[in-house]
Structures are given as structure tokens and as C-alpha cells.
Image 1 (cartoon, helix red, strand yellow):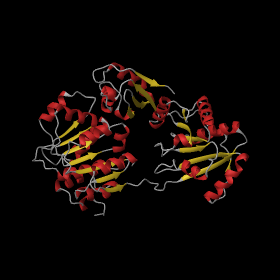
Image 2 (cartoon, helix red, strand yellow):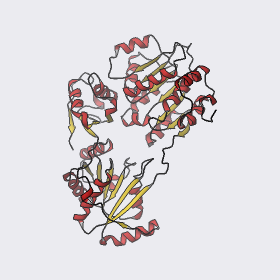
Image 3 (tube, one colour):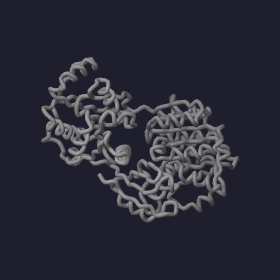
Image 4 (cartoon, one colour):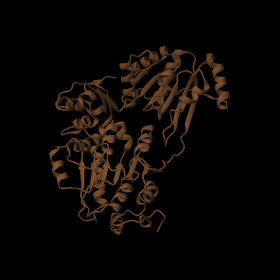
Length: 462
């Protein structure tokens, strides 16, 4: 018996027997780290990517404490999409197949409401659902959560990204505070920290490490002769590295707009962020970049200050920053967990003074490199995976993210996995969808009513 064997845990014998029959012998890293805490009843934050085994981790924990004879809803598992909820419910049923008379019910949007009401009337032990539909049932009085003693937020970062913060708050307010809360997330943005502080009690934190644990940034420096070569250098570096998300930092507003226009003329998907933008244009720029509908943001340091646009694939410095500390802050925005970040800086003879100061600040001699060879590069820029749809309705019209997700993924709709970030304003909403299904998404939104009304929709063009 190894140290990571499931048999080392204090699990219900029926669950252990089932795990053996399923061929589950060794725990994955996140299971080995989290299950002892979960089984002891502690709140837990688990960070791990899809495929790390987190469903079995929280699934075994909630099934181990479940009282089947008590026919009440004892566990609520919230997921961002219908597909994930169905997948989680299927895995829970597989893990629970040696426990007789257990009832697991899914409550998701995009499917008729009536049959779900009928199923709820017959009772359940475990609810797996999406925030929008669970909130709907609570609002209509067809669901009560007074007996829930375990709350699971699965892919919490994705739920927050899709705009479900308000729905989560409304749901959690109706669950007893004396409960165990388990939060699983692939990433740990500031919003996750904020929500965990609000709803959890001294949570344990575990993380399934990626193969590469150190966040490293590879810095490259390229000498250019003039502005014509400078913009071509950015083009070559983008073609060579093919980043999905990147920022090009410029020192002036004029250069920001000029560089963004030039990159778009080259066929890239670039947006400009500087102080002269009208608020509406600024909002749309940030929306498109944050939901991966534009792959390159060209910005000044002032415009980008305070924005939550970290974890980029690459940063490009059109010129050396005026201040060496600013240079370090710029490049610190790249470097995803588990992979290298890339920072490319261009400089000319006119910037030799700043170049010397940077060498002193970094305490190293900077070696200039040759630009990529244009003859061996693909000339086709990478297009962003997503595109943005704008809806002329928002919070004032009582529209919620769940309404938009449900409309998109209902009968003959698109998959929940093809829907990205959903953002709501007072009288507008933006939703990112995969570029390949935008026509189908627009058709679905134009045919189906949102909150009983027809809503005008359009694609924000590149």
C-alpha cells in the first residue's frame, strides 16, 4: 500500500469498495492534498487545472458525510456551465453507485423549467447546478437550501469571469452559515480571494503544482535604427511568438494609436488604450481585450495602471520605459503559471542613456539579439478565439448573466464551453463567444426573448 492509496483515508467502506471496482487506487496530487482536510470537515480552497481530479476530491468528501436516510438537500455544487454540471453529476453518480437510494439532481439553464420543478417536489440529496437557474428556483420558492451542510464552488474563477458574482451572493445568503465550503479554481485572481474571505471559515489552501513551478520571464532586447524598423520589429516578434494575449507598451498617446493602427493594417487584432479615448470607447476596448476578443492591447503606462490584465503571454516594449522600475512593472505582467513569459524590448542609439540605467538597475549586461528572420515566418497573424456580442439591455431591464447564458445554450444553441466572459452594465451587456459560432449565437439571441422582450444584438467588429 502506497502513501497515496485511497485506502489510507478514513472513507466509508462502500465508497472504498467502489473505488477499487472503478480502478481508482492512487490519489492524484490534488486529491492527496485536499481529501484529509475535506474529510475532517474543514473549509478548503483547491487550485488545480481541469483533469487534476478535483471532482473526485470534493465528491468523495461530500458523499462520505451524506446521510442518505435524511431525505433533504444536504449538498449544493455550483458550476459555471451546464456541460460541467452534467459532467460533475455523472462523476458523482459513478462514485456513489454503491450507496443505495441516493438522489442527485441537476438544475441548469437552457432546459425547460417545469420538469425541474417536478423533480424537486420529489426531493433530492445533492443539487448540481448553474448559478442562474439555482437562483431562479430560489426566487420562485421551488427550492430551499435550509438543510445544506456542504457548499462546493467548482471552477469558481470561471463563474466570476462569466459575471455570476451577484447570483452567488444571493444563493449563498440562503444557505446556513454553519456549513463546510469547498472552493476549486484553476486560477486565484483577487476576486477569488475576496469571495473566500467573505464566505469561508479559516480555509485550508492546497495547490496541484504544474509541471513547471517557477514563473520565469525570458527577456529579449533588440536594437532598431528608426521608427519604421521599430514597427516592423513588433510585427516580426508577434509573428514569431504568436502570443494569444499581449501588451505593447508605448511612452506616448500618439504612438499608441499609431502602433495599434499599423498592427491592424498588418492583419493583427489590436486595440488602443490611452487617455484621449471617450469613456464608451475605453469600456469597449477593455471588454474586448479582457474577454479575449482582441489579442493585442497597445497602451501607455498611465492608461494600463491599475487594470487587471496580468498573466499575459508576452509584453513588448516599443521603447524602453522612462523609468527602470516601470520597465520591471511592465514585464511582470507576463509569465503564466507553468510556462515562460516573454518580454521583448526595442531600443535605439537615442535611448543609450536609459539602456545604461536599466543595465545598472537589473545588475547585468544586456545582450542585443537579432530580430526574427522574416523569410521563415508565417505571414498570417493569429486571430483571437473569441469575439464580442453587445446586447442593448442590462441591469435596468433585470437581465442577469444566467439569462444570457441560458438563451445562448438553449434548444439548438451553442455549447456553454463556447461562451466566455459576460459583463453587464445598466443598459447594456457584452458576451464573448467563440468566433466560429458567432453567427449561430446572434441568430439564437435574435430569435429568443430575454426576460420576455426582444433585445437588439450586434457583433463588435474587429
